[in-house]
Every structure is written in structure tokens, then in C-alpha cells.
Length: 271
Image (cartoon, rainbow, N blue to C red; front, top):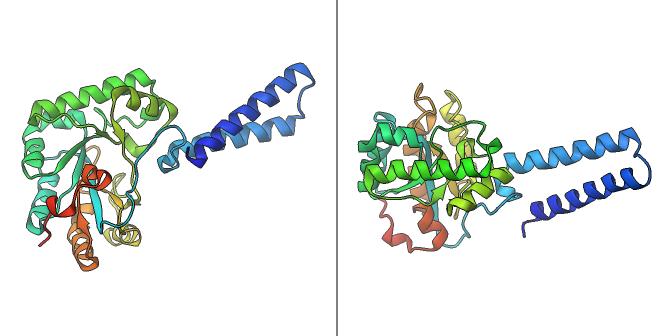
């Protein structure tokens, strides 16, 4: 069991013990109660904001090193203009990627979903509406939303994805429970450029990625903006990232192939 999950269980038991003491013995000093509640709230919030801690459920965010490979992932598409730019860059270099698509966009642009699939890339799920309050939704909502997004992708290209990255990436106990109910694998990341919120400095985005570009990494990039109102910096720096991968002798693999140990040669042949 991940250390953060153990910490949550221990903290929860301690909180119940303090509550019982208050009821059965005497109230705690106010400062103790406030401090304990604040610490517990911080712990629970950190668990949501940092899915790699796996506090609320199993999350896959990197692979064991040894295969000399990484997984490039793209969120918030498809978009007819920007996603196709990414596809062209990947096609020129022979690299493969995993695209976590938004359900409503997949319905609006099924031809782009098909192009992703036909180019040999992998498709994942990123919520139907990209709801920023997704972590607060009940498990049934999450499971139904995942199924709705799966149906949108399946309608477009005949594939029903089983990889899931929550909108914004936050993972609460409700999100984890809904994903488990839907039978999907929750995917996070080990390298993130932070270019999905608004226009970002390409050099800074590249520096964030380059610093964590190592064997087994799952890299979070964007092939579209959430509201399609700007072009993510990931697109400008993607050729530089691919050149750096080639220079380091790192191959690209889809997320499933990287995590499940599919031989790199069967996934891509970088040029």
C-alpha cells in the first residue's frame, strides 16, 4: 500500500479517536482541535492535487526504468488545427503517443479521432466536458461520464479506450471510486510542462519537461487548449523534445505499451 494511503488511514483513525475522546471524556482545547482539523484537511487536499501519491486509489504515473523508453501523452483534444499539427510532427519522426481526448470534442471532430487511431497512436479518456470540479463529483457521475466518453471515441473510430486521466488531473476518493467502477486505469504523469491553462513561455515549458525526461517517464503535454482559444506551447517545443529523446537514445511508446512491457521495437522506429 502506498505510504500516503497508509498516512490517510492512520490520520482518519486518529481523527475518530479524538472525536470519541471529546464525546466520552472532555472537549479538546480549541487550538488542538483546530490544528488537528487543519492538518487533516491539508493532507486530504494534497492527496487530491498530487495523484502520484496514490492516496485514494491506484494511479499509474511512470514505468520502471530499463526499457530506454518514455510515453508522450497529449490532453484536451481533439482539435482539427492543433491536433493535426502534433500528428504531422510525430509522423515525420516516427514517434508514437497517447491522446487523452475530451468526449464532446471527439463527437464534434470524429475525423480527427480517426486520424489519431489510424496513425497508430493510442486513445485515452479525459472526461466528457473537462469539468474543472470533477474531483467533487460522486462516483456514479464519474463512471457515467467515463462511459459517455468511451462511447464518443468508439463511435468515431471503433475503439473503446480503457485509460483515463481525470480533467485537470486531480484524483479524489470519489474520482478513484468512479474510475474503479468503470473498469479503467487511472493515468497521471512524471513530467509536466504546465501549458494547458493559458499561453505559456515555450522555453519554460521545455525546461520543465527536459528536467524530468528520463527512462520510464510519462510526459504530459497538450495538443489543444481546453476551450480551443490558444495554441499550447507543447506544439512549438515538440520537435525539440523529440530531438532530445533521440539524442538520449530514448524511444517513445504508448502508455499501455510502456506500462505493460511491450517491446519498444514493436511500437516505434524513430527517424
